Amino acid sequence: MNTKSTTLPGRHDHPPQPVSSTRPAVTRPVRRVGVLDRAALHLGVALIKWGRRPVKVDDREQAVLAREAHQARLEAERVRAQYEAFYLSRIL
Image (cartoon, rainbow, N blue to C red; front, side):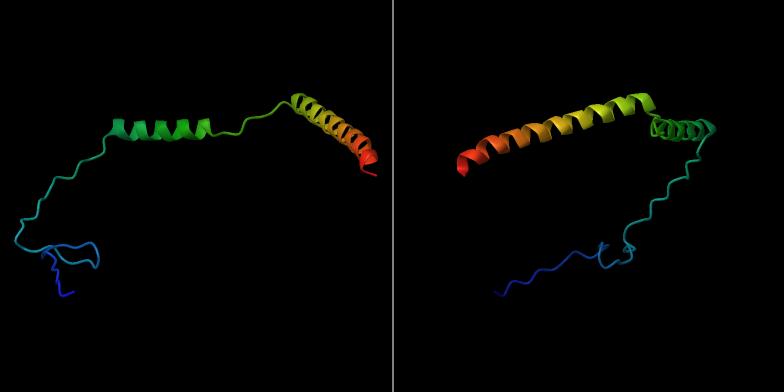
């Protein structure tokens, strides 16, 4: 394979090379941040922080859920033991 490829002169991302002087540099005026923009930014950040605040869980509700989960585990263990006792006697 004897194909040779060349790249165009100018700016490449890697490795960084300076911009060629054939293009005029475009200068844009700096946009100042206004009071309204700054207030909107602070309001947005405050809303995000407020939305991510921890929610207090009612202890009574948590206790009821824990009791129900415990009762469900006990019932599952009872059913499993009953199933094993029933089918284990068939195998032996």
